[in-house]
Length: 606
Image (cartoon, rainbow, N blue to C red):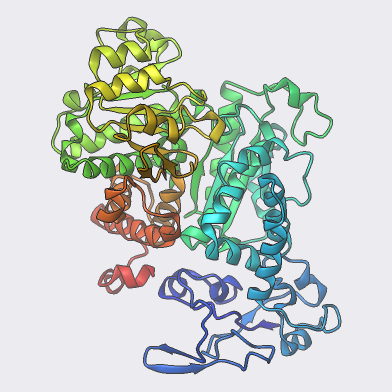
């Protein structure tokens, strides 16, 4: 049977290049779209494409030729499959051809109509978690509509499907579970994973986001409830990065939980036993990685929200032999680097002066160390020696400044930044003694940056860069209002979760921007999968950060914004993808890019 195209979503070069014509989303979900127009004609490539009269059932549908989509499903099986279901948008001919005439209300309501209905319902709710539930209900029955909502209203939708609301959604995952999504792997599946992956119905998976639920945002061990994170991340991969929804796979590795409250919760859906550690844990991950690579040799695996004692070890083990990266370590690092480069531009300094900054990082976990590593690599790209770059950092954990006196208790990555003097100093003492010019927070300790700390920083630094990056909002080290007030409006600010505009008592207005990984990982994923890369290298991530930083306009920098507006995020992802592909080609890692494609990568990706 065949499905026709709908709602004037336009097939692009990117989709023609990397998607199969047998999939609904080859036509329905492309990187750029022809938005709804008031005029009666669309001009493309010098051709006229008339639309139906608005009173007819095909209103808002382009008459531009698109190949039909072949599917095996029939009748009600299509209506209950969220990948194929278009709700009431099926036209009369489709209802006959696909054998479900009479199974839908008679009126044809296209995606614009359906979107308006969902928006009205959602906007009538005050609770963000209830809005999240409404959106996930749409996700479970009509992915075309769901992603149309995200693409057209990303500023409104992103905080509902991702940070900060996704944290609460994870906490309630078991009590509001409705429909399975993704795959679960446990200790009991040892020896079966190579066969298990064939239970997944889609043959061509491009991106997997996997977590073990051990460190969900700043909420700690949520076990199987952490599945909400891969689901949310992959929604952004689709809406922001242009990856087709049937080509993504959320995964939860369930090895138990050390959260006693969850183990005793009658509605918890994971294994109710203490979390597995040590070699048995790593054996589960090893079999999983081998299994997914066996079925999908070119799949990108994104590690997400693994505890600090596991995250770096897993990345080190697999990064050279698998197409993978850790978003908490590398994604956060690249995003922060982009914000820092923007901050330097905002205060009139060249980006090559990064090595002149003194950087205080609160938090020595995987995110904090990952950020330090990426910033240090950037300094070395700008010509600093490794020792010079390393000496720019002051990293503080719960016991104070990392120092060589406790080198035996530190991981190799932490030990790299241990200082010979001052070990154990508090945040405030470090600020007073070394006078940092940047303050980055990745502790998940809400309110950690007190007024005396920020005022001390402002006393010796004309334009302090302050990034409280912890999620969700309640875990942010300080608010935007606090940072601007305590620095008399002189700080350059970005945060992990969104904050409202700040108006000072003297009438000045500041616009906080969000330093969020969603600006980086969709473009990186798009780039490496389109390129056919075999690894995600540090240089690719540096180029991704550079592309993001360069997207910020002078006008945005002038009002204190160091990240572009979220409504531009699809264009940001495209630019990042192009930068990543170019670097993959430079490193001879781009197995899928022909010489003809390379002539105009921008058009190829777009």
